[in-house]
Image 1 (tube, rainbow, N blue to C red):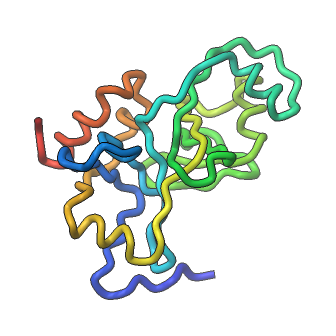
Image 2 (spheres, helix red, strand yellow):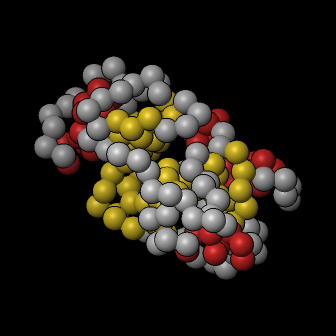
Length: 182
């Protein structure tokens, strides 16, 4: 199946960062860095990579999904966006592929099934992981309008920022990648 045609004037930002403009009003997207998973004529979907929600033992997370595990590794959970908060996503390095894995650009993959959580618990998962709940979504043309209005700056996606252990510093670094140092 072919992806939808991209209308004239539409820029496909898939595989790039959306970096919130410093003047963006205080809301969930202020100081956000979003990895754009897909952007086409049907709209856009992305994941906020720098909004830490909490942390805890991986075993407790697996138990919440009905999976028995004694995994004690601490895992950090991130808010991927305000849409579909009940949906989980694992943005990870491309060294793992399971039944629910979709290859993305620049050595990244996205998994949405329990298989990746089980693999992580067994020590057979991806080397780099960002676990997120929820996503950012835009209707057709909405993201294009927000970019044109200056709400978002575009920057090349950088895996070192996606998997950074210091999410509070990711926005400032991404601004530099977008050509707007603070």
